[in-house]
Length: 302
Image: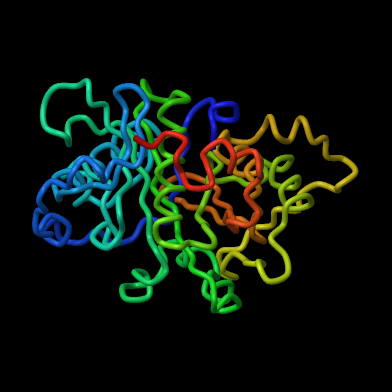
């Protein structure tokens, strides 16, 4: 997602799951600070890289709590609320992409202003699967592509005062560099509309259903017990410009890059959102974005 298509940052996330004991997440052995070469990109005082320590992961969870719970009104389990953290069992196995403001004083975890959670297919297979499988049937999608490597994007958020082009560009610089490093062939994740009434987003959901469906080998559906219809308006009644204007910026950004959407929406009562699944094969990414970030992710590299 580049600056021309993002006015603010929404969250990529899926349904809440039971909160593990804080020790599960915080007991990860602290790692030695990685060398400066692990920085994936930098614009001015902002830099992006993967979290190096347990305390940085904790700070990312605190940032997510501020955005999802305090700002967006999400409901989290009591244990998470007491901690002031958005936390679940996947945090211990995912990599946490960070944007840090290096101009701020204090430890690195105090500088974290944006985050994304990344889960590679090989890691998911060794753990509890993909997080978004709680809402969408992602296993059949992956099974149809035995030679491809998938990566799930989730829990994306940025502090309000940092919702600018630089922060967003660095998050996507980090995602792209990470995908190249790990040989990723396709990304996917949930994107959200505010509220739990899909009909309130009839225009946008219908536009997505009719114009950018993930079909053929990329088809993926919402879980049948959670499935909500996206085809809420006849195609002849849809005005593309109005539909795009009605979409959250994050979803519009994915469309411009070359993403497709799955069949069916899911209402997430805990986070008070209506979710769709976004699927983005690397080969679908529009050439102008590849040129912008660099085929080797050097656009904002050091």
